[in-house]
Image (cartoon, rainbow, N blue to C red; front, side, top):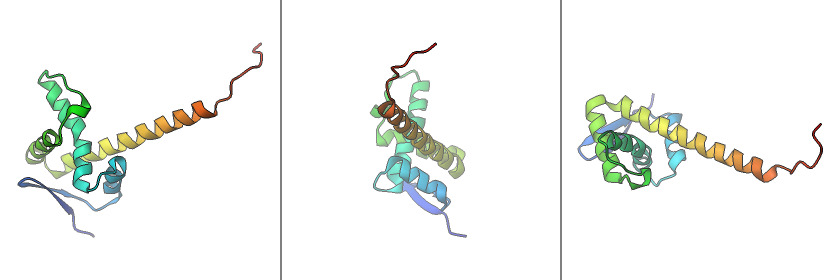
Length: 119
């Protein structure tokens, strides 16, 4: 069995398994490094926590620093599996969302106008 990958966030280390799920995270966001891809996945978690405090914020306004701070906090409080699971689910959602948009665009581009009669 392969050793777990170590991704460092400040003084904290995220240990993640070397399996196909890691590839899903990197594929979903296509950042330069696995660390950057995980942070991109963690923006939604950071946004959820920010909104729980009553602050209004857009997903795109969440900074890498805010995402990393939330990731480190969750890593210390809940552990590796929790953090990795959130990142994996966000990556999966991103891919599903983009594939659905692509399918919808394909359908609308290839749909012929119905000009017949409906009886």
